[in-house]
Image (cartoon, rainbow, N blue to C red; front, side, top):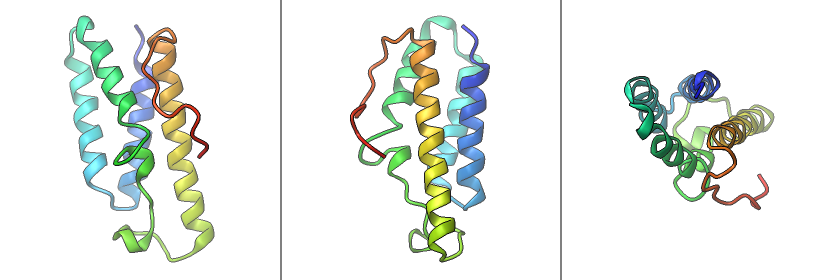
Length: 116
């Protein structure tokens, strides 16, 4: 199981969130990156499933709203805010698709019908 793309997407999400000063999820995802590097193969599937369940829904990665009102470092400019949030959703979707690929299409995908 090649996890290179999975790890790359996690790193991209960390970088995107860190850019705006988000600490809670970026720290958690950093832990996942460290964890996956040392997991035995038999535990990788549960790791991937947990990550996938954390992508969408209330309190999830995709539930983060990058705005100055949330205490994040972004100008109070609607275009920049939209761009930052669209990129976060795009990265979450890409990660979801990569996890699906790794799980062979058998993953527990939450909110597939949700339009973001």
